[in-house]
Length: 619
Image: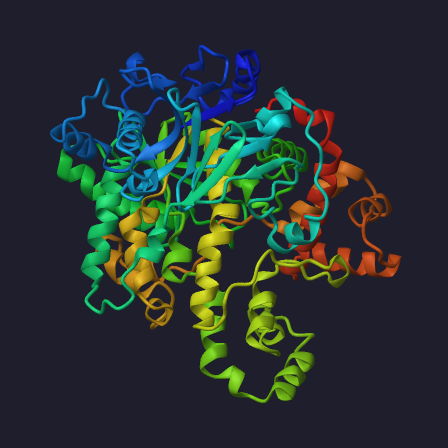
């Protein structure tokens, strides 16, 4: 993994070098800038060396004929197999690096007049890259179809553009101006949905987009998401097919020229990836990967015991990383995270992930994670809510559903409360209610887009999470938190064959006899007895306690807290107090997250402006 940057502004070598300095945390193993001899473009890369550690693999990479120049962030699954196949087809390689594989395949396609999209659709992995064609003075930018790696594009005067792995890099070349109108979507999602970024003239390249820039003219193509290349008509897929695909994806993710570790927990996804990684290590005669888990002082949140049992079963060395507890530490990590994201981001787990990544990076350079399993295999309770709504609840007359929701409004069961509130209306109302994370009506929070609900509501929920929430939330956290400390997270459950198989199975099959039915059956033989029955806790902090502590640390007494957090909302003092008390009570997670999002917004506003020009990471 790396940090990449570039600019088409004439003679911008020094500016790109300054951009790379703001991305140095992403690539601690060296950096380089290449400039076109005619001053048309400059490309730069801060490298984290994980595959082919030799200097010959340093970037920017230049083709042997000098026509193409590449900067690349990510990894390509099975790159050694692809290099061997390309060599048999007549291509000559100077390195064993996956970046050169992309350079060779892309440049070969462009020389032959082929569509580069067709090349990229054959590559599984996680990537963002820029390729400059000297002969045509043409720049290609691309981002992987699942949106695992980021790539931001800044529009400049005269049709010129700049690009970078993080928004903060642009502050080296121009003042960044806050955009307007994105707060309702931010509050609904707890992040800013792509392509918006919270900054004027800066867009996040949507997942799977390949963009071509030439003399100020821009055109775009789309790399098909592997889920949409799935064979929906196939009835022959088995648990064995899924297991084989995940095993291959894990094996490819372990193929690095440095030590690889694993995140573990009491859940199914990271445990399954770790179990297969250990099995593959034994098969290869290698030492099993080290394992890492975050420990909490609250037994209701702590999964250390389950992780210890798992690691004893797998023979792994387990490292327990303590979750932060002090408000000043949480606040400082939150501020660093917001600088790294460059936009408001209100999932409090980003603080945990930063602390975890810092500890993991002191032991390994590459770490496997189970990200994506919930979205692919049906792990979230709202999917079961959608299935229950479709199967039974929507047949109940709407007035009766509304009355039931109203009568239960004072209930204390969060899942039932949310189900009844969302299920009181039409399918579109249920979809919006179950995907909108803000419960404060005065905020006017709105989700970014509504999908076609002509088919299964459950499928639509899973597709929305896979295509919008996963890249905007979990994958963003994995990238920023890992790369803040020079750590490369690899996500085997998002291998393209795995995604295709998961998408070919209807949601009702994933949810048959409980969540993740197919994945659960596939991985159970590799896990210790009882692990698959372990109650899903999730990687979440005590939001109410954190909210109270951070707000007091930032603003002091309750009057100042309420004034700051609710500053932009037309709301009475009594409502402010009521919402605040609910949020910090420890009994209303949805309200706690909503108020946390408002608090993060105000902290981000205080950081925004000249302060955002500082380096993205302060750790």
